[in-house]
Image (tube, rainbow, N blue to C red; front, side, top):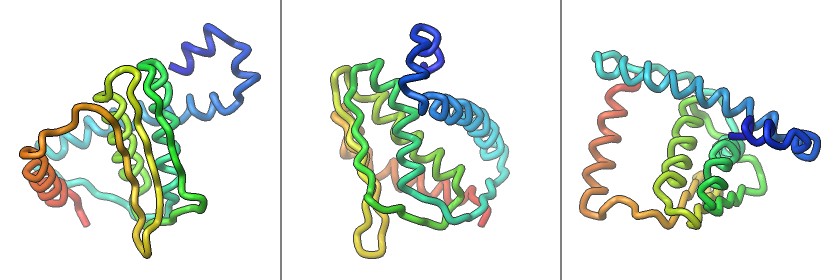
Length: 163
């Protein structure tokens, strides 16, 4: 979407040099989508996924997801606001898998929010915990379906991750 925007208004690149960085991250997102498909095929065939823990900044990962999905939100006239934690939130995790999770959650929030809606994203620390809140005014998941959905998905995903 940013590439289309720059083709229509090339002077925007001079006014907003950060657009090139967003475009590169979007390219990485497409690569990750292909990886998702390959990973799903692995899981469906009975294989497990592996991951590599590194120290990564949760605030940055969530910010990148918000920037990437921002163009889609603007197209739907959805107000997407990210309230980052003032300091980095360092976590030990697989950077790419964590990025995949927050990109998926942010994308779904925008996807299922009606036009002219709102999506708020907050990263914060509470005691020794990191917390990310993604809140939208979409139609959501029915309350009676939510516990089963979360429990079954979490158990299934955990059984497929190689530790």
